[in-house]
Amino acid sequence: MFPCRLSNQVQPYAWGSRSAIADLLGTPSPSPGPQAELWMGTHPAGPSRVEGTRTTLTELIANAPDECLGQAVIDAFGPRLPFLFKVLAVAEPLSLQVHPDAPQAKQGFLRDQDLPEPSRNYRDPSHKPELLVALTRFDTLIGFRPVNETMRLLDSLHAPVLVALLNTLTASPNASTLRDVVTSLLHTPVEERRQVVASVLEACQQHAEWSLSWALRLGERYPDDMGVVTSLFMNHVVLAPGDAVFVPPRCLHAYLDGVGVELMASSDNVLRGGLTTKRVNLPALLEVLEVVAKPVEVLRGETLGAQTVVYKTPASEFRLFRIELDGNEVVDRSPLPRVVLSTAGNVELYTGGECVRLEQGASAFARAIDCPLRIRGKGTVFVATVGLDCGLDQ
Image (tube, rainbow, N blue to C red; front, side, top):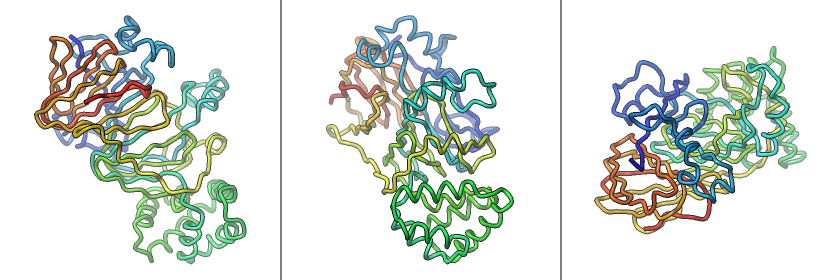
C-alpha cells in the first residue's frame, strides 16, 4: 500500500533524552537508555523499513527509482533519496562541530578511503547542510557573534587570560582576526587548558547573561576543553516551537538542549573541535571552518494558506513543510518523494483510493507518483521533500 508506513531506527547516542522520543512514539518512558535521534530515510547507518516487512526504504527505491523519486530527482542527485529526516532529542550538549561543503567532502572522502575506520574524518563524499525546526524550546550555539559584540563581552569579563585576545581584536576588528584568535584558543597547550578555562569561568560567574550561564554548564562537563571559551565567541540562539535555523556547511555549531526535527543532506561527515569525548581533529576542522561574524537568522517559515508553513533554504537536497490540521484537508501535488511525520494528533494520507493513518510519532513514505497526496485530520505533520521547484499546494 502506498504511501507506506515506515519503521524507523532510534540512535542511542549518550547525549539523548530518555523521555522525548519515547513519549513521541508512545513507548515506555523513561526508556532504558538514551534515545538521541529517530532517523527517517535511507542512510546506510540506519535505513528505514517498510512497516511489517523486511524491505528497507533503500531497497524499495532501488527497485523502482522512477516511480519512487521521479525523473527530476534522479537527474539532480542520481537514483537515491538525497535527504535524511530526523527527530532530535538533546538532553546533553552535542560536540562543537562543523560539516564540510561539497568540494571539501569529495576531496576528503577520496583522501580518507585507504585509512582504517578510526582514523577517517570523512565517511562519504557529500556535504551536510542542516535545517532544524524546534518542537520545544531549543538552545543552540551557531556561528560567531559580530566582532564588536565579542569585544564588548570580553571587556566586561575582566579576565586576565582574555586581555591579549581582546587587544588583538581591538587592533583589527574583523573576521580574519577573529579566526586567528579562535585558532589560537583551540591550540592552547594541554597543560594550560584547565587553568585558562577555570579563570574564564570564574569571570563568568560574576554575570547573569544567559550565554554565560551556558559556558558555566559546559565548563562543569569539560573543565579542560577550550571549546568552553570558544563558546563565548559564538551566537547563542534560543528557538521557540516552530522557529528554525539553517546551518550551512563550514559553520561551527553545537546543539545544547531541546527537541526538534532536523532535515539534512544525507551525510555523516562531522568534524569535531571540542566539548566531546569523541575523536577531535582540529587540523581537519580548521581546514574547512569558515568564520563569518554575524547574527543568526531565525526562520519562521513562509505561510502557504491557512494551514501550511514552508521552511526554504539554499539546499536543493531538501525542503520542509509544517502543516497544522483541524479536521480540514491539504493537497500536495508535487511529483517528488516525501516523508511525512506526525508529531501530534492523528492524520490520514490519501492517494487514489488508498488511505494510510498516522498517529503521533508515525511516519510514511510517499512516492513521486503518489500525487495528488491528500492529508487530512487533526494534528501537526511535517513533510520532508526535495528542494526542487515543485511545491505543496492548498
